[in-house]
Image 1 (cartoon, rainbow, N blue to C red):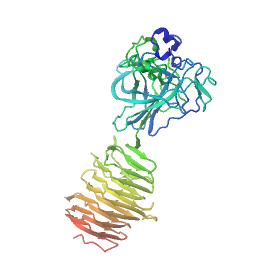
Image 2: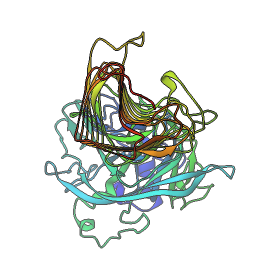
Image 3: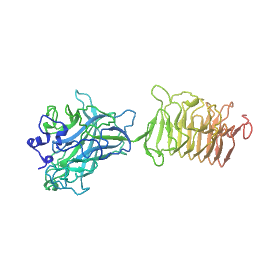
Image 4: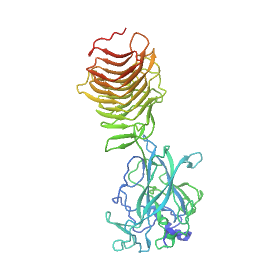
Length: 542
């Protein structure tokens, strides 16, 4: 009878060797098990890794914790994630070890498996908060749980010529193994699971005699020569040379077993509940990887590398400028980015800005909330979207609420494109930009601004000022300081400054280098068209 179907303490001693030495490598005793870390395969990651204890490359098999053999219901660890990363979980990968054969057994020299043969089994991953109220750290609130049915491969057939003990032969490594290391990945995408820095995790699944709901011996596989694959399925444990994050107790795990002999303390601390089991697991760390969605600043995104697109995955807030990588597009997918003041300070600069000479922003809502009534100058002036020395496109966005109080401070532009050299002269290389299809309202100073050596097409935007106000002269669109633009089919309204000292304009051309305006709709502006200096003479303020 295979060790992973045994139930008596007498038989368990075959797996543990004895009841006083309880290191995991004794759980899966194999005279030919090799631990050399080269080759069989690497488990690729696709997101941002915040914890990773998986061996890279992953060998043909690793030491493992057998659930059926050790009366285990749940098994895991306490971990601490890396700093400066998001916590919105995308996926979690666990390394398992499959010792089952289609027929025969790993230890009876008759294991036979059809190539690529598999069995399906539901496995649960539980994520807990850490309860530190007592003297021993323990699982707290259940933060998330996910059960998925995984397709698990049987281990390959015995190769008696190369592995006389009945193991399978890994040609890539030139080694024999009794079990087969395989990965399972829990898909948390779209579930909205955000974790704290420190958690306890646990893997749980049912076997013939153990688990939350033991399957029993009536399953057809139980009487077959190969037995049930899930009774020979283990969780991989091995300390990897490479490590991301922190194993809080390198000599401990969290274990729920009904067998006292499974624990380092021989069950003195209790059995049948998930608790810390420490003192005998040094070198045998449960193998798991946590990945979160990729981040753009403080925002969760899905990166489309082939098309260089950041796809915003949810609404987010930021207390500092978010930069778009050179040549990339930020697709908001209708989500919002909200600027807030940082702790102990106030927001400075643009909410979103180019990080190179080309950028695009599409289908994004940009706003601000509760910003301090401050007044900044230069690069610290508040803008929602800023292209500085960059071309590209700004299309189909909703920009609103870009202000720091009701003041006359000359900042709070919703969309601004500028191109100047270090001496504040128009830069020698002209930047082309498309600003189209945007809805802009509730801005502090200007709706859309193009300044410096910029060639802009400003079309099909709806720009709405605050109406008749006394604290600042707003402008719907500004083309200035050497910029040129084709301004067409925009709706521009409600830019009106009541005092006569300055004027608010629907379209302000200030020392522009050529502006064509066509088919724009203007209404309730103090002045619809204002032209200063080049391109049409001096406008009479009276």
